[in-house]
Image (cartoon, rainbow, N blue to C red):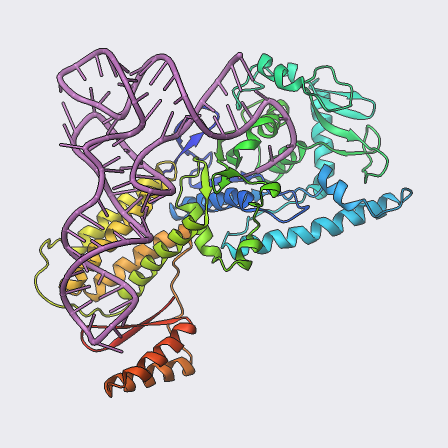
Length: 480
RNA sequence: GGCGCCGUAGCCAAGUGGUAAGGCCCGGGACUGCAAAUCCCGUAUGCAUCGGUUCGACUCCGAUCGGCGCCUCCA
């Protein structure tokens, strides 16, 4: 069964169903990182949102072809990589220095994503590998009269594209206003025209082009790689809200100017993250990378959960208190999962609200999917899981669920975990040393040697194993 | 100046024209050797403020106050 998801479309400012050009196969382009430094948790929020989106599309029965670019040539990269080179360094040396920096931070970035259980994209193109495609695209725009050359640089003539501004919902006058703070030293026909190809300057790596040595502009790579790898009609294109203008607006100008038709159907943008009520800034001391948090003892998956349990289109206020809440919420889900994996030890007595567990489960699943399909309403989707946990815990206390009911519940938890990736099936077996300690504690308990029993229990806890004595005298364990 | 978003309990956070989901925290109780886990009970007469529309609004409209974003590189 394939489910249809609806997402807020920045283009129309409406929640609209995602209807792939090819039924059941969604093409997804997400703007990736500029690899000149560590990603911070604000960046990571966007990638986590996109991971949830991709996983949800897949769980809903769609094939997803996902492309995420790696920006490995850009102003800040050049700034940070060329400093130690002599003024007369060869172009080859400059490229080498740039690559050394971007390779390093690409690896770090991918490691961070892995730590957060973000699934890797199907295509992970580097901008520097697609310069010929970009040049061809610019030539195409030039031929169509949408680009012009000035002193070795090429600019996009936005006056030639009536729909320019449709995504950001800006009119020409609104843009004139902002553009008046113009920092660009190049000569352009209009202050709002943007650069497609930049003529090289001393101290920069460059590529040969029909316009002389230079490098690609900031926006052309996504158009070139998106069209090359995903095609002329992309279902979903995503990024952070800050990319709406000018980046995505310019991508539309480039791609649609070249194609002559709609390029992307659904534009989906993730909101920003604040830290403790303030904008994240190095000067405020609230600027965090994933590694900063891990060094503080934060569980990356708790961060993943904390971020994903908030709606992606709302500003998220990251806080350590919120992180703690996330950790505890996860404990509850994981403890419940462990309980369902076990056999249960009901106390007996009729449950006052005897509803068939399978009915509860179906209700929860329906509520969960309705919420996820409605613009990824994760708070509501998670609420359906917690409601189920509350109900089934109570029910299981009174009359133990059957093995079949437990398995069905576990299947639902797995299904939801395919998206949230925060409460996976855990390794069921324990190593011998732990097994021995559990036995030792059992013996001590039987002998009513409470001091020894507690000491062993504490020892296990320090090893990450929490014991739970059940009503029937048996003892279960869970990781925690 | 233009475009847009947000303001729900101590914290986080859904939601709806018909009478406030869920998570965390907190208090009381049950169970337990003690814990852990779990259960039961309690915790916003009210959803920024003031008006209006309506049989009825937190939900629609208007105004006000407060916070934020974009228009410039930025997830």
